[in-house]
Length: 436
Ligand code: ATP
Image (cartoon, rainbow, N blue to C red; front, side):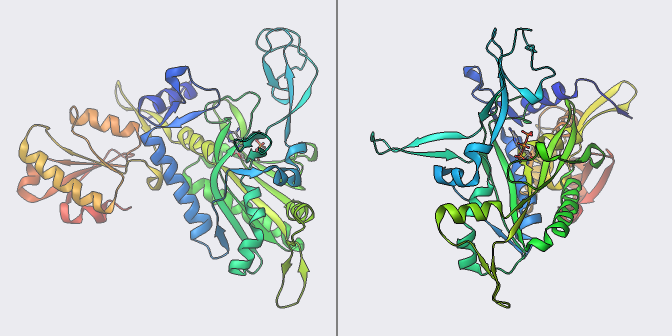
């Protein structure tokens, strides 16, 4: 029996901390607003999500080129892209308590939501983080931490063309950190100041942008299913012109029903030829594409799907988190992760911790499985029931138990996380049974 639950966000935040998924950053010093650290299980989970994304959209395709570009990029890049002027949020400050808010995120721009004081004039606030490079006065130069990964793809467009001579359509993809000086970071991993972004720029002929847009929209839905985000909680939103980013002619947001409301998860934007054209003008380097077969030269247009990895991890946690009544009066919390992204795939235990022959056999099985499936855990704490509950709570798909029968007939018990059913499996058939 599944139980719906209140305070789901608080429960997830507390589980994430207790079990080592996500910690507030620099907590022993009081933390830093808008920063979180991934603990051992969160780091594995994030790695698995990124790996799945890369396999789905980059290494599993022939039309995609992977990239890992610098986080710091010169001012000229952001001047050309329009981010120094256009990458702003509307901000209001309370005259009384001095707190700042995003004007489009509060109910009224007259009264402070915190202290009811009077709010000042609305101003635009630029989200880019400037950094001064160099140690000698007069020789410093200004760079910016990238506010999106996309500019890395645009400034490398010519490099990729020269090295690989790709035919249109093709994409350039990367996963990496982006930085935004958010006015009011909040809602756990949802709005932070540094976050992992997975995105690609897909280059097409202008006449192909609409069908390309539809194609990637469908592929994004497939990803939602593959990574284990509840499809019923995801909704497309056609973003009206006045809410679109400065570079976009059409944007569809994928919104998710977070416990704190329906908000953006992913974006899909038609960026036209805005960026390549701007970089060509500013850098004076030709960024035209040459079609060998027709001799045409032109600037390709761009469709860009963008996936926040922190928001993905959050939506995955929200989708996976389940409280169930196992039997009368007995409850369990279980994270029903897709197997491919579970941070621990298998837990291996001896039935009893201090029976040497069981522990020895369990270690043998552990070593054998780990060679094939690296993300496993040896767990001999407490009794079996408690171990199952603990593994459920971190979403481990299988628990393998070595007991006295194992010593006689070389079989083990394999318990399934979701059905809680137990099977007796021969050790030499175990790897096949654990279908990873
Ligand atoms: P919002 O309207 O929520 O500020 P945005 O429209 O500015 O977001 P995009 O520019 O489309 O967001 O950013 C691309 C993706 O990056 C988003 O779909 C989201 O997944 C992620 N993202 C953006 N800002 C943040 C943030 N502050 N913290 C975590 N993820 C973010």
